[in-house]
Length: 318
Image (cartoon, rainbow, N blue to C red):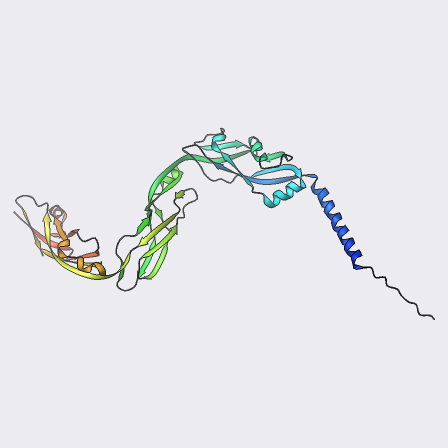
């Protein structure tokens, strides 16, 4: 029996490459042909409301339009990947509805504005819903002060010695009359500083309700911190508003004032910088013949004042 030989035909590699290239071109031409045809699809678009009318304010609302269109596959494919999904309506261009209460817009009247974002070849078949609504109210502004929410702890002998400074110290808020009326100040986001031994300077963003707009949106602040020491002075208590022919006798007639002062200012503080007094008119409300001592003058560099005793006994003599 004779042995049969099997012949294997080996095609050159380039024949395979030519075949693959032909197949790829065929697919591309087929896709181009399909994408050139028109199809129906639905796009989602959210109109935004703005106002160029003085005194009118529009709240953000969620109105989504479902636009049925007929367009080429090229347009639809591009829109799906790069769709911005919104357009703007100006209140002044919309006479429908009552601006003081709300705005009602028939979506059929928005066709031209929607078409501006499409190719001229695109057909708009339908828009759902047939009506959209926006909340519209009176626009007001108000200036309100800035307040901080700081949690501070200091190293030994260090203190905050003057009030916190804000730059700016107030902001302008804008919104509906009802929302603005409830805001009397803007409080910065809480901040915590531990073991402080130096002046703090920082910036904080302002976060408010989405229906209130704030300008500016960032506030710089400064918390003055110094190494401090304690001081004590003894002063004579003065009396004021004493009727003619009467005399107000105090027991004791002198008090001690303890205070903190930045170390750098310690030598500049003098006993003559402090005035302590009692008001004769306060005696009428006293039940135990004691009256409060008030510090009516002190150096601007001192703080955390304590008076000992805080109340003194009094006698009224004619």
